[in-house]
Length: 152
Image 1 (tube, rainbow, N blue to C red):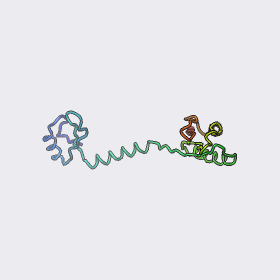
Image 2: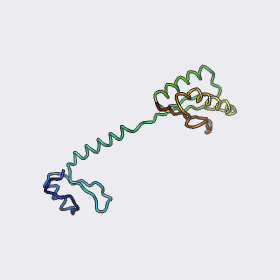
Image 3: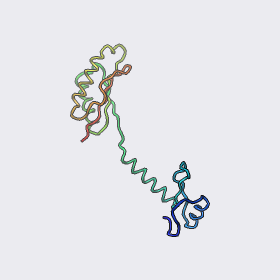
Image 4: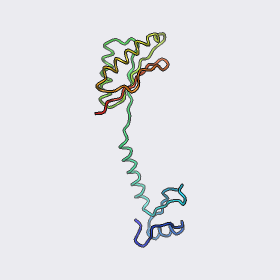
């Protein structure tokens, strides 16, 4: 960007502005916290465009983690369990994390063992699709388990 007649080096702000104007380019402050501040002579619109392009490429590389939830009761019957298990399989195949929880209403908290057995059974049934990230833990009136999909 810098022409042949300009040497790369340390200049005062005034001299740098004069050089930028003579080349019909902009003086852009790259890192203001440095001592002395670092500036470049370049085309500002092109600089912004390239910066947006870099940020977009970085954003595209990041993966978004999707968390799906499935709710059970402590005494969920077989048909409901199978129905919800099919949904859980679908979520894991799509690459989403699964949070399955048993919600205890009122005095049903006395069935903690049944809830834990139900969640462990679900984890065992989904063993080939996902791995258990967090074993069943009781948080207030909810007992939950976290299952993440296996990498292919």
